[in-house]
Amino acid sequence: MSRLSRLSPDLRRLLLATLFFGAAGGVFASTLNNYLSDVHRFGAEDRGWLELPRELPGFLIFLVSAALLTRMRESRMAVVAMALTALGSAGLGLLAPTTALVVVWVAIWSLGDHIIFAVEGPLGLALAKDGREGRRLGQLGGARNLGTIAGVGAVFGLAQLVGDRYDIFYAFAAVAAVAAGVFYFRLAAGRDAVRSRRLVWRKEYGIFYAISALFGIRKQIFLVFGSWVLVSIHEVALSTIALLYFIASCLGIVLRPLMGEIIDWLGERTVLAGDTLILLFICLTYAFASHLIPAPFDLWVLFGAYVLDNLLFALRVARTTYLKKIARDPADITPTISLGITIDHAVAMSLPVLSGFLWEAFGFEWVFLLAGAIALAGFFVCLKIRVPVPGPGRNFAPRPGYNP
Image (cartoon, rainbow, N blue to C red):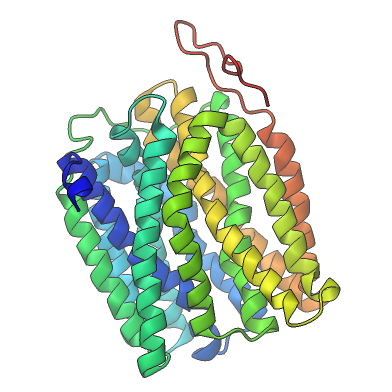
């Protein structure tokens, strides 16, 4: 606590807001698949189709963000995001007797979720020193993981005490989102910053856009089909999924800040290219572990892949630090991140439908073979990353001493 008190008031507020947001997100991510399967009897194809309305807000976030930026700064956008997150969580737990209402509440929750992802990077960068952007964003990731521990821990504990009470789980998430909104409201960061009041599309940000599309693939592998293998193929219980999320979150408290330091040290090119190769390995594990490894050891390997996949989400901040280094204008950052989210959701909306068809028609292995092939292609995209040399002219070239 003494270390927290030594931080600047704004950084302390941002860390606490991120912590409470992590708690709300942890509840949602660790329970959604079981909720859909247990309460609404979704199959793999149904689960894939739900990603269309769930990811539609992310696809439209470029326009939503541009509209909000003309009226408010990023911290106020974060407050709006948390209000939507709280509403969606409460509705899902208390007012979702039909599939149609499930879709409505998931879409509302998703809109808040995607707005916050558009602004959390710029808010973190506003409180970071030059050259230490990865460290600051990694610290925020660690705070989010600490919150996730609280959220997932609450799910795990309540499931042991009262069973799978999704109304209680999502009420807890709503309260956490409201608390996050209070801390975002008190932020002063970015109050005097010049904000973009226009849409931004620049040719020199092309690699950032491509990386954003690759992240859309990674997200769907983890959020949808990675966990769906555990739930539907191996009938893993909700409490076990929550425990895996809890383990990953505990590790993330230490590893996410460390990964931020690694981004500052090795550079975005090396980190993101390595991430795609690890993703390829994870895809092959999901596809073939149960064919090559006898039970029950195959399930332990899949648990390990699930935790590793969760941890590697921390490397997404490398996209944000890369964008800051190549941005022609600081006001480009938030709208460009928003466009990146739109691009990754163009993938996120189409891939699950195709993947659900492949799963039902040919088997789950083909879903992960497709994702693995795309991850391999992404490796070569990441090798094209260059960051500008500081100074006049900002020539785009590897940094001095940088050895990919």
